[in-house]
Length: 202
Image (cartoon, helix red, strand yellow):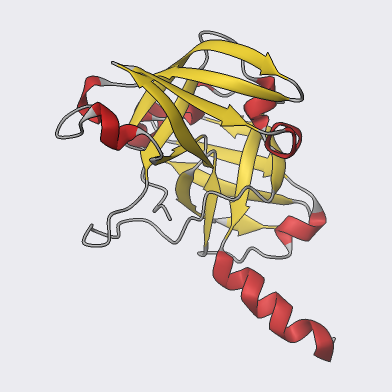
């Protein structure tokens, strides 16, 4: 599992078709190599834009991942291009600090940037999502956007708004997003369980 606290930005270096899947090679920052031998990197789970993928090869700072057809269809990873920046977070160690919220790395759907209001160094972002996802969100609750743990400010039937601080804008891909861009959405897993339990009563 993850916490939604992005560790660094990576850069897509190559995308290769493998049948209906793709091999994704990402250049990771040097700090990802510290205290981690090449043999231990293989099989490691890394959230890329919030999507949990497995390291299948590692050559220095170039780490390879395989994304299947389901992942490519249901996330924005299928729209990546060489040179794009991606959010990176390694799986949380059992003894690690829990700083965000429970993020599984299982994307629920794709949203779109509907509006950006950046009148100051802070910015208000509004996203449009399917009604089924908005139903699992509550104001002051949590949501993961491209793998970033964020607090919901407002929620409507098909939209939600968040406020981004300068740090988040600077160190994640959200600072580079434009109106119309697609983002990966993972709703709070606790909301999913509550909805499942209440479904028979409804």
